[in-house]
Structures are given as C-alpha cells and as structure tokens.
Image (cartoon, rainbow over all chains, first blue to last red; front, top):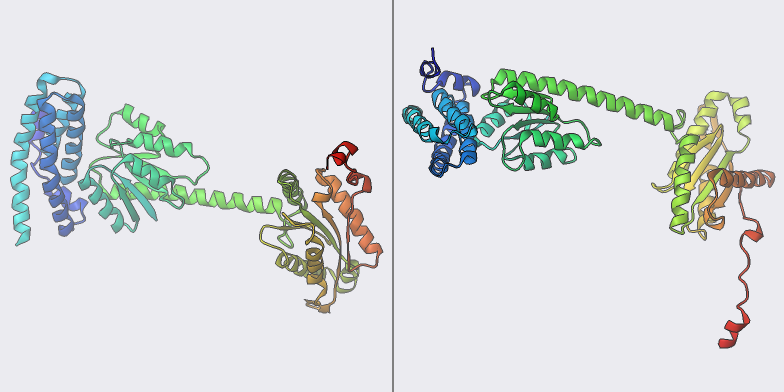
Amino acid sequence: MNKREESFSEPVWNQAELLERVDNDQELLRELLNIFKEDFPLTMQSLESAVAVQDLKDTARLGHTLKGMLSSLGGVRTAAAAARLEAIASAGETASLRGALDALKQEAASLLPELEAYMAEVRH
Amino acid sequence: MKILIADDDALSRRLLEKTLERAGYEVTAVENGKQALEQLCKLDGPRLALLDWVMPELDGPSVCRAVRTRSEQTYVYMVLLTSKGSKEETVLGLESGADDYLTKPFNAEELRARLRVGERILLLEDRLVEARENMRFRATHDPLTSLLNRGAVMDLLARELHRAHREKKSTAILLGDVDHFKRVNDTMGHVVGDEVLIEIANRLLGAVRSYDFVGRYGGEEFIVVLNNCDPNFAPARAEAIRRSISNRAILSAKGSLPLTMSFGVLLSGEWGLRSVEEMLHEVDIALYEAKAAGRDCLRIAKPPAKAEPPPSPLPESVRLRH
C-alpha cells in the first residue's frame, strides 16, 4: 500500500477521536471549530502567498501550523496534506510546492463541509 | 498546581488549556517562547510547562535551554510538544533540557499521566529542598534556643565589621552572661535552666531590631550585634537590653526567678578594623570587668589612648595665614 492509498483509508474528519479528546464536551468542540473557522482561511491565504513567491521558509512554517491545527481537530487527511507540503518546503523542492498546495486545498474542500454540517447540526 | 502552556496555534492552545483545567490545573497560556520564558522566570511562576517545539520568537528547545541556565531558582519540569518527530529531534529536545516530550495530537489520558510524573519529580525536589534547609538551619542555629550558634555569629559578625568599616559606621557588640546561672542549674535542675535560657533568648530578640542579630555564644553566654549603631546611643541601647532581663522575673515551672545579666560592650567605630577574634577578646575583658564590678551592669571596652592620638595643633604656617 503506498502513502496515498494509506491516507485515503483514513476518514476526512475523525470526529470520534476529537470528541474523546474534548471529553465529549460539545460546547468546547463548538468553540474549537469557531477558532478554526477564523484561523484556517487566514493561514491558508498566507500560505498561498508564500507558495506564489516560492518562499520555502514561510511555506514550511505555515504548513507546520496548519498541520498542528488540523490534527488537533481530527482533520486527519488534510493534516497529512499540510505535513507533505511542510516536508516538501523543508526539503527545498520548489517545483513540487504548487502541486502539494493544490492537494491540500482539495483535502480541505472535503473537510470544511463536514465541519460546517456538524456546526449547523449542533446549532439546532 | 500552576502549569504553563506555550503554543502559537490558538486551537491547540485552547484545547490544552481546557483539558488541563479539567484535570485541576491552574493554567497560564501564552503564544510564543518569549512570553513562556517570562512566565517561567517569574518568582512563584509555574513549575510545570508544556512547550510547543515550533513557536515564534523562541522555540521550545531554546526556552528549555534558557530556563536551565538559571540554576538558582526551583526546578521547572518541562514537556516539549512535537509533531511526529524523528529520533534526532527527540534527542535534541531532551538535550536542550526538556524532561519529556509528547507528540501532537496528544491523547488526554497520556498527557495527564505524563504531567503526574512531572508532579512527582517536583514533589521530590520540594522534599530535598526542605531537607537541605533543615540541615542548613541546624548547622547555623542553637538547638535549644533557636538563636544563631557561635559559628554563624562569628561569620555574620566578620562580614558586618567589614561593612561597617567600609561605610564608616559603627557596630555595637554586646557579650552577655547570665549572673549566677550555675545556682539555677544546681538548685532547680537543668530543665529549669533550659527554660531560663529560652526565655532570655526571647527577651534579647524582643529587645533588638529585625536587622540586628542575637546568638548563643556558649553555655549561658549570649552575643548581641547591633548593626549600624550610633556610638552616642549605643550605651543607652545596651542598657535597655540589659534591663529587658532584669526588669521582671522569669517565670519557670518551679516558680519565678529574678535574674540579671552582665554585659561587656564594644563599639567597633572606636577600634578601627580588627579581627573578630580581637574584638571578642576585648569585649570579653569588658564583660569580666562588669562581673567584677558587682554584676547586673555593663562595661564598655575602650581602646588604649594611643590608638586615638589627640588632634595635633595646627602647624604654625597655617595659623599665620588666618
């Protein structure tokens, strides 16, 4: 099994693991999701600018931040994509930056609706 | 127990904060290494710390190194938070002075268990510090009266005499002996004798200022050092200290005992810079004179007249000019 297949076998959002981490505290979970909703787009924006100018240092740093944020939240596959981007930037593989960023955006695109759906659900 | 969290990611920080508050910790959360270091350097700051590896300003290992260079303060137990790290990273982290590391995302159970390890270490440190302080106290204090012992008084006095000489101030040394103490011991027994010594120690302590010191010099001999004591007021102050013993009887288990003390007094300003041993020799002679004069009094040790030559008349050339 190669790396790609392995990551696809993971859920987009490991809600169960996250609930365990917050001791089933729905309110805290909502608070964390709100922090994420605020911080994630800003960090992504900075990351896109860093990739656009091929700033390896900033790309690695922002990739790392996203990796932490996403893995805390149980966004396992998106976190893995952020980790790949960080690794590529750290290794200085400028040519692969764009592709890794696109992969990250793709993963985020499947994670965000799940989070939104959960938020909508608990609000009612 | 206080704990510090340092993580630049707001989400991870909030999650950690809440998890630790639930576990009963008093949490301080900061977002970079510089703030973390400030918190850990504070007096009474947290002694447990969770530090993210990658942070702005100062990273986790740098915070660890900086904290470890301050050896004078109490131990801080530090746990580094890393993403799935390589072996080299782990080694680097521990070498920087961290006590443990945890990989993110953390498992709440494991986090709590590892912090309990930290608490055990800190408790152990507290016990060691307490034991050391007890030893230090015992090495410098008299077990019966809890006053400074002779060795400690000699050390403090040597320092004080140098300081007074440097600052052109005077230190008053009082060497006192309980009059007829042997009679108390012989007729009332040693238990009462001990009671008397404790009461005298308390009265002497009560008669001086907080920055003076009182020590037990030997059996029934006590030493009082009045720091920065104006020579003009020293005799009156010595008198007041003497009267603190004679002005009312000491209540013992076997009745009230009217006791007195004799004192030798020396004002260091009148003697110039001399060794502690010389000064104590002189003040001991003065104490002997007080005893010979009938006890319950004090005598001041005066330097021989030639130590202070009388002011010489002005040379003629100077006088002529006026």
